[in-house]
Image (cartoon, rainbow, N blue to C red; front, side, top):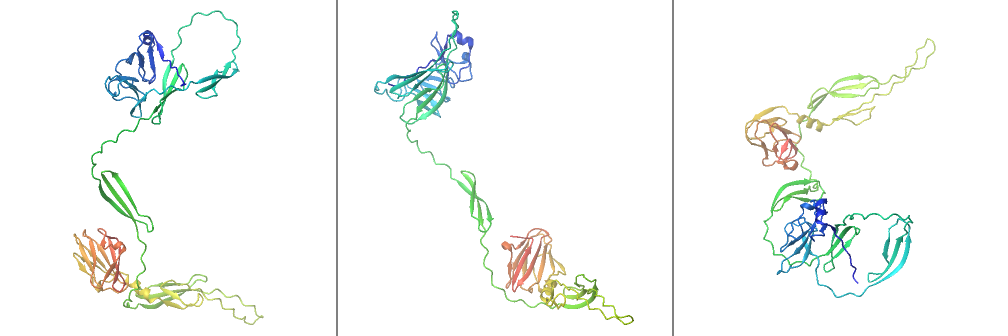
Length: 465
């Protein structure tokens, strides 16, 4: 036999309600016992400000009666369709999760089997405890165990006067759960008989028909916002920014691995030989470091040597009176230390000094000696080696690098004017630079063109692509 739940609403006469004028909780019902009218609360308005549910309701009043679905309902609002001809005539719905869910779907099922109720145990509880009834059987074959608290024995009191009417019971909506499609709707009271809290389980409705296909949206417009070079060996990535239909792509592409070393270039022409002469030779303090100083130039070196004195020899033994003592032993030789381009093929105490002629020649060639101004494009000459060429043009110019420099020779360019310099190679010359940057960066940039192999010129300094 199905379980029957009795519900008692908060009640009172019309005058009592008007005098008390309480605020009903959202979904809580209040009944006027003398007029049989009722209202549903919204948790905000007082009794006298709420419309009766017997008229067409509005949003937030809890119980709504109309021929068509109300506009802007709240979750938990109940709607009764009083239409007499439509498909929804006489049906009730509750608002849940943006939908009207029918409260009483389906038809009345066949009569169930008659249930049985039996009394199990009856236990006397301690005074002041709560009475409990526990079903240890099943829903259709209940066995009820009772626990009834023992009452305290009190003195017989005088008959009291008739008390005033007790406070009306309250009803509130607890949880609302969506049940499986086709299951039965359930209302459970998780409160008390005097302060009921109803938890609703409402079955999900059947899936509606598929809606019509929407119109074609606007075409997505993609653009490239930038391309970044990542570290070698890293992963390539694409970042999408913006929202459809206008979006942009940012690419990060890893740098490729370093290529194999190129073949050795041919030997360049021999540079002019430097000259070396010995200048002064000075005896330094015993224990100091030897030094060699070039008081000439890189192409005509004059080396001044400072060689520390040896340590004083030990005093000889005292000879016989009147005779001359023997000479003391000679002290150790001084230590000589040299730096490039000076080399020592001997030892620190027996040095054999040599000069690296190639390094001296290269150092000599790297000294710029002259500055010449160019107001327009220009092709370098062999006589421009190790000089500064200052471009004074206000507009862009091209400086042509002819294959006229020897290995180690260089020409320095200064963008002295506003015109950017572009470097181009003539026949027989090849320009090399990092990321193929062959232009001056901006005004006052300095760019060096150095011959590093036969026909090979390295472009360094403040350059741009």
